[in-house]
Each structure stands twice: as C-alpha cells, then as structure tokens.
Image 1: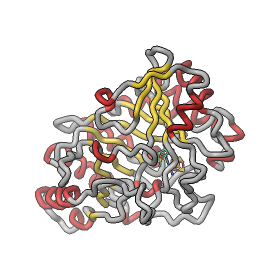
Image 2: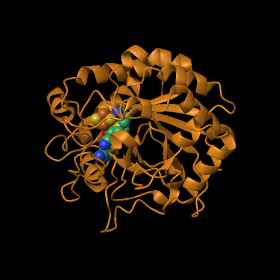
Image 3: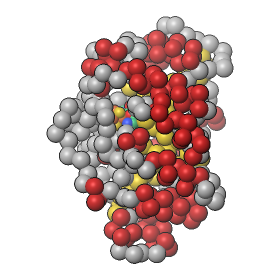
Image 4: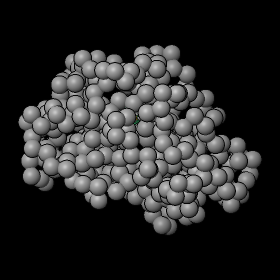
Length: 329
Ligand code: SAM
Ligand code: SF4
C-alpha cells in the first residue's frame, strides 16, 4: 500500500498525460512563453500502462484519473484507457478535460472502458469564456459535455473556478444551468498554481463567498462528513434534492488530513501533493530496466514522506515550481 507517516493511504492515482493544452485559462497558464516538456522526456503509452498496472496490482490503487494539461490531446488516450480497463483488479477510471474534442471521442472512450468525465467550464457567457481561456471555444465545450452525457460517461461533473471581475457573479446561474442539464457542479477555489504566479489570497473568491452567492437563489443543505469521505468536495443538497453542488475549498478549508491521492506527472515523477516542492523520479528507474518490485519500493518510499498538509496557510508557503498544467490538476 501507499501509506504515509500520518496513516493516510493513497488509493486515488492522478496521471497527467501531457502538459500541453489548447486553452490558456488565466488562472493556469500565461498567454504564451510556457516551456513544454520535451517529447523524449514524456512517458510512453507503454510506460504509463506499466506504472498503472503496478499501482493497481501491487500498491492498492483503486481509482485512476487521467488529466493534464489537456488529456484529450494525447494521441494514445483511448488505447491507454482500453489497456487499463483490462487490468485485474480493474480500476475505476475518469478523465478531467476542458471538453474540447470530447464530442468526437466520448463514445470511443466509453467503449474503451472510461467510467466518467469531469469537464471544466467557468462561465455560461461566450465572451467571458473567451477572456478567461483566451480562446473562442465555448460552444465546443458545451457540445463535448452533452456528448459525454449521451455516451454514458456519467455523472458528468463540471468544475468551475470563479475569478474576481470576470465570472464571480455567475455561481447561481451556473448551478441553475447544471441542474437543468443534469450535470454535477463543483466550484474550485482558485489556488496558487498558475505558471505566472499571479495568485493573490486577497481578492480570491472563497468557498464562503460562493455559498453566500448560491444561497441568494437556492436552499442548500449540508450533506455531512460521512458522505464526503476522502472526496475533496464538500457537497450540499440543492433545494431538497436530488441535485447536489460541491465546493472544493483547498485554500480556505483544506482537506489534507483525509487526502488519498498520489500523482504521476507526464514525465514520470511521483508527487505526493499538488503543492509538493519535491518529486521522485520513476522514469529513470523504468528506463534503466528496474524490475516492478524496485519501482514499487521507490513509489512507496516517496509516499511515506508525504507532508501533513499543503502548507498553504503557512506564511512561509512557497508555490511549487511546476504549474498546475504540468503537475496534472
Ligand atoms: N485541461 C483539463 C481541464 O481544464 O479540465 C485538465 C487539467 S486542469 C489543470 C484540471 C482542473 O484544474 C480544471 O478544472 C481547472 O479549472 C483547474 N485549475 C487549473 N488551475 C487552477 C488554479 N490555479 N486553481 C484552481 N483550479 C485550477
Ligand atoms: Fe488548459 Fe485545463 Fe489549464 Fe485551462 S485549466 S489552461 S484547459 S490545462
């Protein structure tokens, strides 16, 4: 098992398939100038499948989430999903995506064995979308989500980040829309993980702000600790149910004590936390011919050293060198 010194067990593996993206969300990437990982540094499809195989057969991982960058840009995605679906025990598999291209790939991903998707959408207004992501692709995202729902990649969860001066007033509209379309909406507090280091604690839209805004239109009832388990989203029942809304308050209500994540970057580094400042190289071990037992030992040792918390509430907090797009969000 991937256990740490605080007794937490990592069963949820986040795999970044690429650091590249076809959007440029302001809270994630600069307009241009971001240095991409070099192709030879990226894990190959075979290397990724080997590590996931090891994680589910030897290390107790039960859930795999593919992410990035934009994972739909990875040419081998469907094949990777298909091969992971054949593993014993079969992990639950989901994908976090900006939705562009999902219209084309949703059915193939479902057939390959993907269980679910999380699609990111921060606004219902095409003009705001264009400002926020620096690309005019709003309709493509909406089409991608609908295709995912039709393909049965459900529940389709929608991730939204609210930014001051841009979409901060949209929480109730986003929730009305999500309820109407049967999507499960989750707001994510903006975190200091942008490549340009532009995050400011002052002025960020907090979970408290989001809930206050939602309560102007909806009655929200807390689901409670038990329902949450190790999930990062605290959830509220909307107007008596059945719909729910989640808030992932990594900054103002961190959930580190219940964290069950381990992360693999596209270039084969294990990260114990989004905010970790250290990484452990598995790619070198893979490419130098290490047997599975040795790779498992390195992975376990890395997780054993996982810190108690993200350190976000500590005045000496340092933003990790890698941005969210390179870590895998
Ligand atoms: N490109 C895919 C997408 O956008 O869904 C997957 C990768 S993206 C890094 C994963 C999630 O991280 C998205 O929901 C995105 O909104 C979120 N994200 C990116 N930068 C963030 C930040 N600084 N704070 C909070 N969430 C962020
Ligand atoms: Fe791309 Fe996702 Fe980052 Fe937006 S949040 S720039 S879609 S990786």
